[in-house]
Image 1 (cartoon, rainbow, N blue to C red):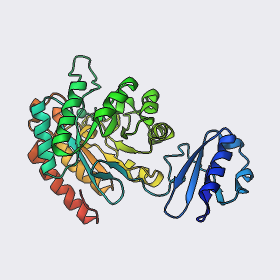
Image 2: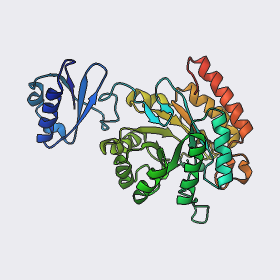
Image 3: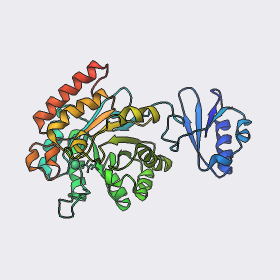
Image 4: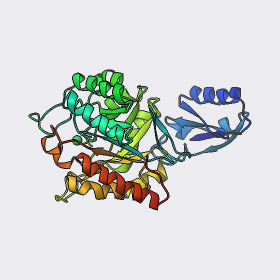
Length: 338
Ligand code: PEP
Ligand code: MN
């Protein structure tokens, strides 16, 4: 349920509505807008008599939110959300590139990639320090040492750092170094982890689980939003299907589908979405054409020798060509690439 206040409603009237909602045993989420404040209600509101709120001074109308996700839905929050990470804005009117190696490998490597990407105008650096690997024998990441190297890269370039957190008990540690916490595909439904990042002050990049429906992804986002963290970016990174020619199947229709239903920015990961470096440039361009708010791409100076995901990682030259194509696609559909 959403309580829409009159545009001249006072702060006291908003507070009175919030208190009344709380007395009903429900949670109130005030959302100040450009013309009026709306107050979202979460919890089991099926028993609420709308008249008890409608009669309060300053209330314009009550709208029932029909979607299972509430705070993530456009019904509750019609305007697009803009997420800030250092100098970057992610959301409407922008196109954000997040790039970097799959893993933090060494000081030399991460600084080289960060410098290169910064020189190409990429303001968000990605790299995993905690790596959720399919096999326990694969490289598991440099952990805190990797986070320190990412912080060093940020100090040098001013880029915002996007890095994965895999366990609730690591959230404080990772948040000390990261600007955006990545929840990986394997953890999209790790509810304790979602609750933990919901309590955190840092933005969250939530990747779609390979077997999750989009409704399940939005409900996972809802866990984070419900914890009080409103800075959530959704990421389509491909799903598991019967198709075996690509690592995952990248469904780009998800982008406009999500954008019609949620105010959260939607980015696409063509690296994990395809698993093959030679397919990444086309899928990156297709994601721009589909209206994505950004891309997250794996880039490494020497992909063949990358510690993880080398087969789907672009070298610098291919990354640059891909960006040029994306820029032209963006221009063709009246968008600007940042
Ligand atoms: C990654 O970004 O390197 C990663 C592990 O992604 P995903 O969780 O989408 O597999
Ligand atoms: Mn990877």
